[in-house]
Each structure stands twice: as structure tokens, then as C-alpha cells.
Amino acid sequence: MRTRTLGSTGPAVSAIGLGAMGMSGAYGAADRTESIATVHAALEAGVTLIDTGDFYAAGHNELLLAEALRGRDRDSYQLSVKFGMLLRPGGRPGGQDCRPEAVRNFLAHSLTRLGTDHIDIYRPARLDPAVPIEETVGAIKEMVDAGHVRHIGLSEVDAATIRRAHAVHPIADLQIEYSLISRAVEADVLPTLRELGIGLTAYGVLGRGLISGHWSADRATAPGDVRGSSPRFTAGNVEHNLALVEALRRVAGEKGCTVAQLAIAWVAARGEDVVPLVGARTRERLAEALPALDVDLTADDLARIEEAVPAGSARGDRYPPAFMAALGVGN
Image 1 (cartoon, rainbow, N blue to C red):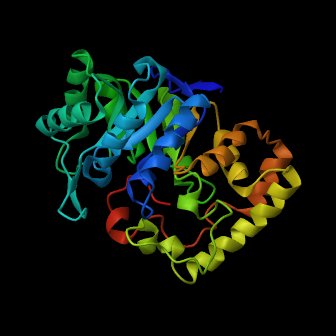
Image 2 (cartoon, rainbow, N blue to C red):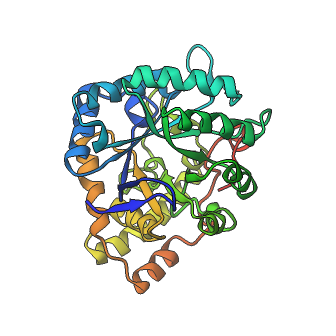
């Protein structure tokens, strides 16, 4: 497993990370035994970066990871944890809380659930419009100084917010959706990250399965699957988007890889400062994703991929309207 360093001040991590959200029901019911086996398989393959959020199924995801990681050398992996999203009974979102006192409270619960004494990268999941980012980052800095947090990250914020946060304490990385069908980050955010020496961890590299090569227009979403309310999966939009996937499939066939591998390889090829996160819930999907790092994309390959899926060609927003309002960048 090759490694990449998150920015100029962040940790060296595996060149591909594991996103654990789907193991806690975000895409419908998940198998606990298979989820744990998938974490183990990732670690054995050399994956060191594991991403979670304290609000994923109200703490379920952190408890799951604690079980999967029990007995492992704590220095053999890095935990990236998002906080600040509030939940209502039943799991509905209830806004953000990134006040300094909330930061300390959320961190205390995460440390306990994960069974660890430190978080490697700690980040607010979204910008809290009621709290200046300087106050939130300042509170995390206190936790860095106390040894409870190693590095500070951000998630889904714009370039101006990144600059303000970085002025308080060096930011290791920004976590943000980045894929062939979600490229808004390229306009202002990615150049700002590179100017400041901040890494990027990309989630949604397969568009929540839409560009994995495994989705079909007639596929029904299971209860609890967030894709049931995603504009890109709605009738009319999904057919258009899957036509893009078929164009990508032709390029993948010529390259001798799967559609998913090509899509992940494209993200990894955006630069050594970009680390794709794969949301594999099963060992089968993980086994398909990992060889993407061995797919060498030439300039000609990249041009053909761009022709198959031009920037801005996807139809539908990446989140429902209520969620789009909380994002620092668009599609």
C-alpha cells in the first residue's frame, strides 16, 4: 500500500481510505459481521485511514469500529472523526452545534465510544452558521494541545472559511465530495488547499454507488437508504446519469479495469495531495476498489474519461435542497 501525506502538516496515510458510514445503515441494512470483516480486510491490505462521524446512526458507527479495531496497534491506523451534526429521535438531522463547549463534549463521547485516548483527525462535519469557525477550530486546538487530538480537519466548507480556519491552527485536510460527477471543488477550493498546503480527502468518489457500474435505473432503494431522497437517483435524472456511466464503462473496458476502479483511479490521479475514501460495506466491494491504485491513467486516458463524463454533465444536485443549503460548495 502506497502512502500519501495530508498536506504539509498532516499525517502520512494510506493512499486510499475506508469510509465507514455505510456500515451503519445509511444505504439500508448492513451486516455487522461482514462490516467488521471488511474493516479487518482493509487493515490487512494496508489501509490505515478510517473515516467516521459521531452522528452516524447516533454513535453506532463508532461502536462498530471500536469492536473491529479492538486489539490492534493504535499507531497502525488513523481515525478521522466528524462531529457537530445534531440528531432528533429517529435519526432525522437537527442542525449543527460547533460551539467550543460542544466540541469538548462531542470529543469526550467519541473517545469513549471508540475506546481510544486520541483522534488522529478531528473535524466539524459542516459549518455552523451561528459559530465563527475561529472559535470551533480554537476549541479543537485546545484538544490538540491536551493530546486528545493529533490534527485538525475541515469538511464541506468554502475557500474563505478554509483560510480563516487555517489562520487559527494548521489544517491537515479538507474532506469534501469529489468525483467525476461532483467537481465544484476544482474552481476555488482545491487551488486554495494547494496554496496553503492542505490535503484533500475525497468522499463520494463513486457518487454513492451511482457511478460504480453496479447501479441500474430500476433498482429500488431499501428503507433507510439515503439515496431514496437523492436528486441524482430520481426518475429522469438517474437514466441520464447512468448513460454517463455506460460511456465510462467503454473506457474502463479498453483499460482492462472495472468502472468503479476507473472512477476511483481518476480521483487518485488528481494529485498526490488527494486521498480517495471508498465506502465499501463488504469485502467484495473492497476487493474491487483497492486495485484502482494500480490503474495508471495516461494523458490520453484522462482525455477520454473527460469526454465520457464532462464536468457538470451529471443531472441533479448531490444532496436534497435542505442539505445543499449547508454546503460550502455546490455540485
